[in-house]
Figure 1: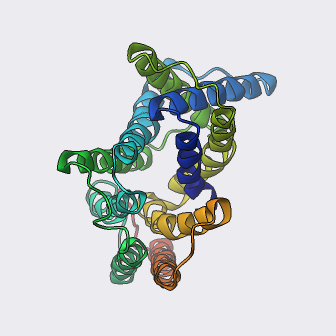
Figure 2: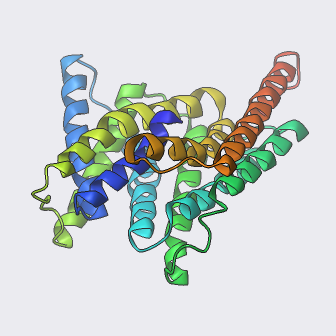
Figure 3: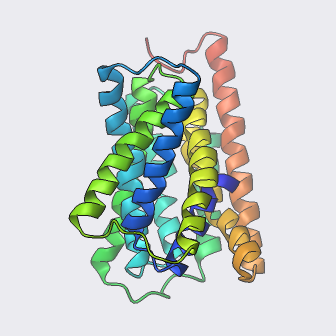
Amino acid sequence: MVTWSSGFVGAELGSRASAAPITLLAWRFLLLSALLIAVAAARRLPWPSWEAWRRHAVLGALCQAAYLTFVFEGVSRGVHGGTAALIAALQPLLVATVAGRLLGERSSPLMWFGMLLGLVGVTVVVSGDLGASDAAWWVYLLPTAGMLCLASGTVLTRRWRPPEGLLQTIMMQATVTAVLLMGAALLTGQATPPADRGFWVAALWLIVLASLGGYVMYVFVTKTHGATVVSTLLYLTPPTTMLWVFLMFGEPVTLVGILGLVVSAFGVSLVLRGRQRVSGLSEVGAPAVPR
């Protein structure tokens, strides 16, 4: 969550450099895809098949291009970051419901309680932010759409179980995202980066921490622990972001925020404990995934 939450700091850095969200995202993924293609070539990895590209084009479009664009645009149009985080916090419950029906990922009562407790913690963290924005009602549909896109991509990743390695997965998704976002930036006349060198600091921050750190771990945990667990970990995003902005920008950490952090962390620990118990039952003859 430390690296995943760094994306919100990168967005703030880009905003301070007077960069439009689409401009920052387009250059972030253009540079990232070039780096990953070079690394894959240096390691002499086989070029992915067209079937793999089609599969990861869908996942990249949902989990990166659409999710990030909707969230960044919503924040840039007036949705407070805390409110956007609260909207995103609805994802674990949505994914757990869908995962149980489509993926056979069983959620025990302990896991459901942990997810609800995590949501309570998130609500506590951002409670002071609600009502602080005068954005139009429809703007709140943007982060909501982003949350739905990430949830859909997470469930599809677990359902399809792509066989490609982690480097190939991130490379293909980053490349597809770069094409989509740079194309959108060119069409809207927002491809030219601002002169402020802070723009490149923000882009580098997002590449190293948010993409190579946060999203790589997101994909890894989705593949190894399931859609429900990885989505529940997102409950730690708002309180971790609170600590990030304190360290980076000096925004004060409140007692309410610390309380929310503790509650969210306890809720996540219950979900992880519940997942271990379900996995244990699966190993002794109660399969979690129908054959």
